[in-house]
Length: 629
Image (cartoon, rainbow, N blue to C red; front, side):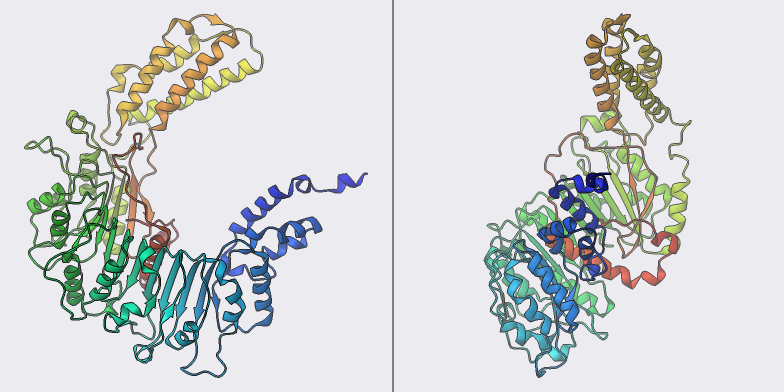
C-alpha cells in the first residue's frame, strides 16, 4: 500500500477549502468556548501537521473572542488570549469587555487583562465596553487610536452614589465611528442614571459626534437627546429608552431637523418597574417628540400611551409631512374607532404596522377591512404587508376575520392596488388568554386541509406533475429515442381547467398570478408541438420551457405552516404566514435596522424575557424564536 492511500480524502483538498471547512465548524461552537484549549479552534491543530499549519495561517479562525473581563488573572487564559490576538492579525476584531475595579483607589489597579489587549485595540471595529464608576479614571488615561472602530457600545453599571464623584471624561479617538450605544444595567435593585447637568453631560462623552449615523441610549435626559441631534448632522437612526426630563426648558417652536437624514426614530418605554414614574417619563417622551420636525422619517416606534386628548405621533407626522413605511404605536384609549381610522389615513404607505390597542377595544375595532364603500380610491393602509397586534382582548374569531378581510381576492382590491398581508403576529401578554386563542386558531375550521380545499389539492397535483415531467426528461437524457407527450395532456390538463381554477378560497391570495401561469402552461401543452412524437433533441427545450412555466406558477404559492409560537421575549406571541409571497418590488422598501440598532434591540428583548422566564410554559419556551417589530 502506498503512502498516498493512507492520506484522508479531505487532506487531498486545497488548503483554502479546508480553511473554509474549519470556519463552518467553528460557527457551530458557542463564543464562550473560543479560549478553551479543549475546543475549536485550538483542537484543529491536533488532527495533523497540515491542519495545524492551515489553522495557524487562517486569521479568520481567531477573530471571534468570548466575553472578557479585566479582573481575569488566570495566566493560562491570558496566554491563550494573547496567542489568539496575534494569530488574528491583520483582520479586524470584535471585543466585548467588562472593565471594573473594586474601589475608587485600588493599588495596584486590578485590570491586568486590559493591558493585554491594548496593543490590539487599533484593529477593533466593534467594541462593547461595560464600565463601573471606579474604572472610568483608568479608561480615561488610555491613549489608544481606534482607527477602525465603527461600532461602540457603552454599558454603565454600579450604584447611583458611586457615580456622583466621577469627573473624568471618556475619550475615544475613533475617526470612523458610525454608531454609538449608551445603556444602563440593573445593579442591586437600582438603576444608573448618568444625570450630570447639560451640557457637561453631553461633553462627558468625547466622541466624534459629527460622523455618527446611529445613536442608541437608555435613561438620558431630553436635553442630552437634543444635544445629540444638534451635533450629529449625519444621524439616520435614533433609539431612546426611558427618556426623562431634567427640568430645562425646551424651545417653544418645533426644532427643525430638515437637513438631517434621520429616517428611524424609536422612543421606547422602560421594561422595568424600577425605571421611575411612568407618567413623568411619558411626559418627557411627548415633550421630546413635540420638539421635532422630521421630513425624511420612514420608521417610527412610540411605545408610550398618550394621556392627553391630542396625539403627539399624529402631530409629528402632520408637522413633518413624512412618508412612513413602518409604524409601532400604542393607540390611546381616548380615541374612537373613527379617530383610529383617521390616523391610518395619514400613514397610507405603511408596510409594517404594530399596534397596541387599549384594553376596552373590541374585535370589530381591530379588523382593518379593505372594503370602504364611501371612498374606494383611498382604502385603509393599502400597502400593509406585515401586521402585529399586542392585545389581551382579541379572540380567535376576530383574528380570522382580520386575516380574511386583508387576503380576500376581489375586484375592489385589484382596482385600488391593495397589497395582501404576508404575515400576521398576535402578541398576548396574558398566558391563559394566549393558550386559549392559540388552541382555537390551530383548530379553526377555515384552516386548509388536504381534501377540502380545491386550490390546495390542485397545486399538490401540479407538484406531482412536475415530478412526472422530470422523469420524462430523465428518460430523454438516458437515450430514449421516441416519446409520446400526450401523457402530459392527460395528467396536467384536468386540473388546469379554467372553470375549476375560479374556486378561490379566502385564505389563498395572489392566486391570479398562479392561475395566469397555469393557463400559459395549459396553452403550451395544448400546442401542436406537443402532439404525437418527436426526437428528444427537438422536444427538450420545449419541455424545459414548460418546466419554467410551472416553476413560475408554484413559486408564488407558499403552503401555510399554521400558527407558530414565536418568542419576542416580553409577551407570548404567535405568528401566521399567509399564502402570499412578494412577487413585485414594493414602491419603497422599509429601511433595515443597522447592526448596532438591531443588536441593542435584541439585548433589550432578552432582558425583558428574563423578567418573564419563570412564567414561561415549557412547551412554548422550547419553540423557535424571532424578533418582531
